[in-house]
Image (cartoon, rainbow, N blue to C red; front, side):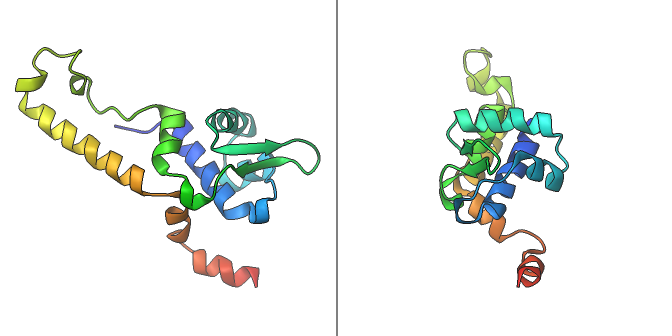
Length: 145
């Protein structure tokens, strides 16, 4: 299983907003794109999807940009992945309607366990959890002083 570029870039953008939208000030798309090495036109598409899923909100104008629609502690990684990727699916056989052997297949047990583990991690991890674990976070705090 490999997450798409769309999901990886979307997660970067969400984490960037969690880090840089201080006091609800919108972050311009250009800044997010530059900091994260994301093509701006592609980022705009991703932010549009995230806005439709009510994970971010936007403000137009010269002081415009994007902010998270809720606190980072309230946005689960699973929400971002589902918005950009859809539900995580490891194997078609996990859908009983696809495979007639689904209930008698020993490998299906493995795929099911892996999917449940991924769901548990993504459902219990928030953007805030990731921001607090960011490598170099202490160094960044010192530079801001």
